[in-house]
Image (cartoon, rainbow, N blue to C red; front, top):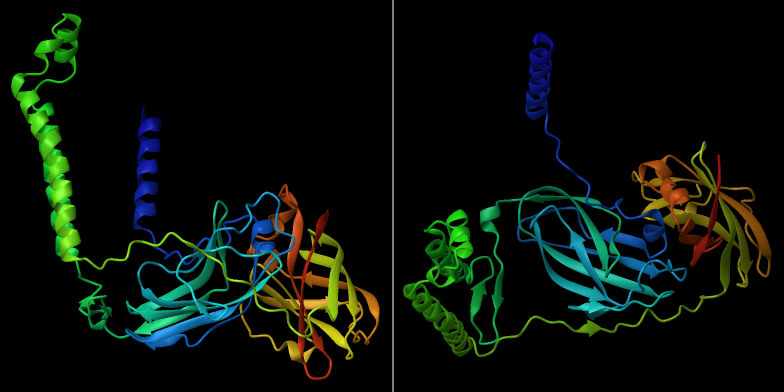
Length: 408
């Protein structure tokens, strides 16, 4: 008996310690939740940048960049025939004021073309002061969210100073923070009270055992009284009439209303660049050495341009591996940047085709949860390989992918 009491006391103490222990704020937004092959071989982000990372309430900030829709789209992932670009935030700390895709204002979902490159821009407005970790992301229908590179934004000022005024079709200026709030609360209360009254009317009398006994005794007709039928008829007529009347009043009050949009935009990829196809890179094979946390590529590079080129960067799932011997790559220091090594770092001459071994070795494969690729049913790696001219620094981008052979 004493042993049981002791066990209960220990358990209770552990619970109290757990509840009273230090509380840590969750900073992740699910950017590592999807399987590695989806993050690597669907939306491949690059050149993502923020216009500023410190601003005040009511000030605007823009995130812009590009993404490549991988040609080697996973067969188990639905094609990107309905996608939506948005920003992941910890609550309504920002509002979106503009969204552009390839220089066009963009409101609805859109279909993306595998193999295409797109340029995006999202304009946001500060709403709540604080420090927040923000990501652009693509919501793929039936697949999930593919997160882009994240950044810390510092919003200063007072939340009470925030304003979100818009001009309606009839020229009236309204505050989106409060317009229709009381009206919405009132109608919710109205329908809540009506539904509660209807429910209480039936549960005010004995429900289960008494009614069951009456059913067993063949007294079905006595379960529902004449007054019950009268109230049911009144409700049957009153509710549709109220809905139609309220709808008519709303249409009369707001004659120029735009319904929620359900169209699918068609925005073509960026036009082919002049230098497209002049430098090609193809991943012949890929091996992942588990003990060293290293992805080793065998890449065939074909330089059909008139200038020598070098491999500068490999980017996959927001993790960048940079060639430190190539200044043109000019990486930005971040927690998701590592070193890229080549067995032959000499420039690939014009007209030359060369096989190069590229090694991306770092703990990023584990911390970014990309090493789980070897356990996926679709064990293929994908990403963007950036090659730079030795003179001038012009950049060539190739999307590469290959089946991964694990080595233990």
